[in-house]
Image 1 (cartoon, one colour):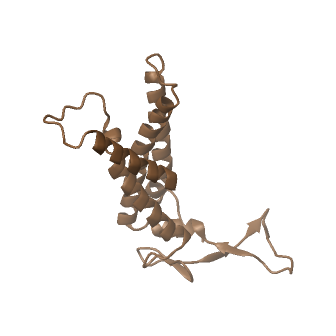
Image 2 (cartoon, rainbow, N blue to C red):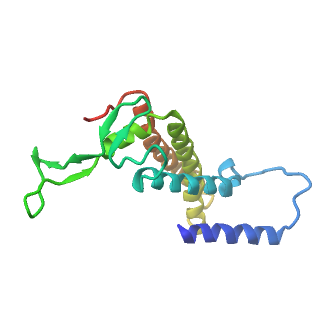
Image 3 (cartoon, rainbow, N blue to C red):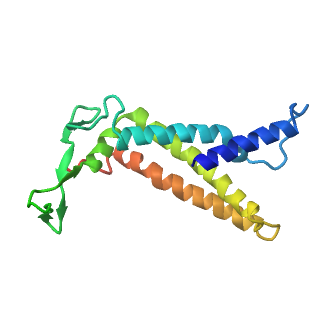
Length: 185
């Protein structure tokens, strides 16, 4: 990811050096919205990724620490840890002590019970869709595989890949928000 960010900054600097002043008339011929907004969408995706890690992995977002209990937006409380069960039996460590794990399912239910959090995740995944659809298409061009015969197919593949990614990730907060997925405990 660091290399990706570094390459994006270097490309932006090279482009600015090659053409220091803006065009008199900005008439886009072929560039897509995704290609024209790569820097901005990339920065928002970076912020989204940092927030996601702080929210669900590090659990330090105020009101969403999930260390002792998990609290939803409507005040319902769930345990922060649950017993690890395999084949209907509790999993135990080498000393016979039951193992507990983070209650990720209810953490997601609680996190996405806040509408602003869900909206931010949906916007973040939509920007990821745009970023990926352009990136996958450009990857084929960079490898020299995109020519006139394959351009339409590869661009379609890139868009389908992006849409599948978006729909997959956006379905999680949407299913929680609309009650399709409920808390487990």
